Amino acid sequence: MGRVALVTGGSRGIGAAISKALKDAGYTVAATYAGNDEKAAAFTEETGIKTYKWNVGSYEESAAGIAKVEADLGPVDVVVANAGITRDAPFHKMTPQQWQEVIDTNLTGVFNTVHPLWNGMRDRGFGRVVVISSINGQKGQFGQVNYAATKAGDLGIVKSLAQEGAAKGITANAICPGYIATEMVMAVPEKVREKIISGIPAGRLGEPEEIARCVVFLASDDASFINGSTISANGAQFFV
Ligand SMILES: NC(=O)c1ccc[n+]([C@@H]2O[C@H](COP(=O)([O-])OP(=O)(O)OC[C@H]3O[C@@H](n4cnc5c(N)ncnc54)[C@H](OP(=O)(O)O)[C@@H]3O)[C@@H](O)[C@H]2O)c1
Image 1 (cartoon, rainbow, N blue to C red):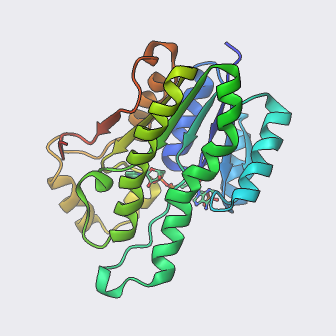
Image 2: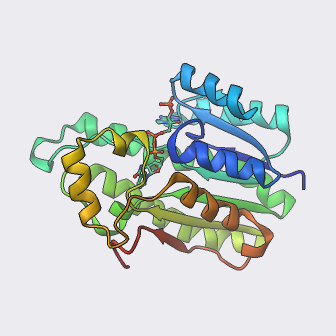
């Protein structure tokens, strides 16, 4: 197939499952991370997928990092904006720093990741943009005014990009995972986790691979008429 895929935050959690699934589907994959060198090295060792370190919150770092990926692997055809963080606090206690860090990574980070690739995709007449949003961007969440704002903003980004890219062979779609069994969710106290699970009609957390399979489909030629859409993968916890 010969297509190249870039997955931000692709060394851990959901991103790692996405990177592996794309590799298994025949893509040459670059996975990025922010600072956890040990996890990234272990991931490369295990999978053979190259990892690159930059902060998605910086346009300059993103543009330079993407230029390096393209010099190493060739033009990027598929970009998965997956890197994301939480800085939870109820609104009356949320600091401007907690607000800004989440905006910089989860929202501006999507702009910084897609924008340096956009003109190349337009020129080549093909591109796939997949943004990993969240159920909490659809329904809001106590303690996550910052996070929910960014994840709702991600949906606005893909709906607009879809309209701009459609005539150029580019699709842009979002996936809204519900609660997925990543380190982050498994680290919460068991009692809290049980309460979360009791609110999921499927009676279980999602698996990172279940999100990865959605990405592989959206990246494929089979999905070329799906553009500007949101796939909710949440075990029936919430309907839009
Ligand atoms: N887990 C869930 O239940 C869930 C549910 C809905 C949506 N999501 C979304 O799914 C995505 C992945 O979540 P996850 O739980 O898999 O996260 P995770 O396990 O915490 O992994 C996050 C990844 O993003 C990278 N990253 C974080 N900040 C970055 C930055 N500023 N620049 C570059 N890379 C950065 C991390 O790099 P390092 O390893 O260097 O830290 C890591 O590779 C996020 O967007 C999250 O909001 C998750």
